[in-house]
Image 1 (spheres, rainbow, N blue to C red):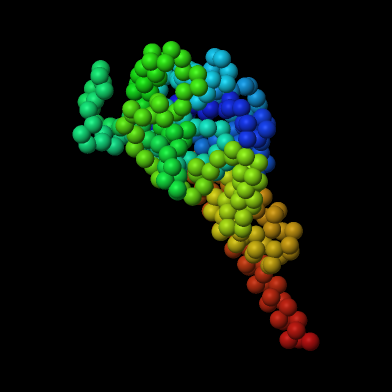
Image 2: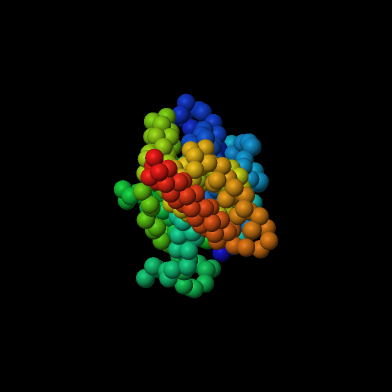
Length: 305
């Protein structure tokens, strides 16, 4: 679906002593880059904050005056977008994933809440004003959300007219009048880094035994600019067979050659995932034949001795 993305990256980070929070790293990658990786197919991506190097091109803007708070920052970002659907994210979500983003983008298409009247000047067509993530503890996360641009612009204009400024206004003043669906968060998707303890916890979680390989592969794919479904089990089985049946250094060299062969096949029109699977199968079969041959030779030598 077509959407624009706004990432708010201009907060003061007072609980981090004023550190440049979007540039802090988790798993060797800046928090901002990790958030940008969750929305790679946004038609336009606007980052509200000071310019910095990013892994992919974005548009930059800033609220006026800087430090005006989330509503003012959101308004500044919204002025640079044109899509009917806008994804809004904070820049401190190390575990936000593409599946969560897709769920948020799909949710506003659900029927509007029963009994809710259409706002003045708005058609009574089915659908919600947006969707907001709800964390596992039941707290709403208005900075992990997808909003329809028209009602969002309408509410911002009403707030500006009522208060004379958007500076310092809380997000709940903006979202209170919107009909928003709730999307239940996966365990870590809503985890944000507000303090040094949060950052340390994120860095520890990313290295936990049950998730380190998935996190590492995701980071490597982002760093290399590739989007490929990786059959981790098949590749690990291949590495094991090559290490045990041939020699330990054969494991990384074999998986490298599999990747090279798959890339060559993909360049000729093959499906990349299928190319990896086929190259892995061929290499694994070879490693097993190699091991069987060695075992047979060893048995023959032992028998003749």
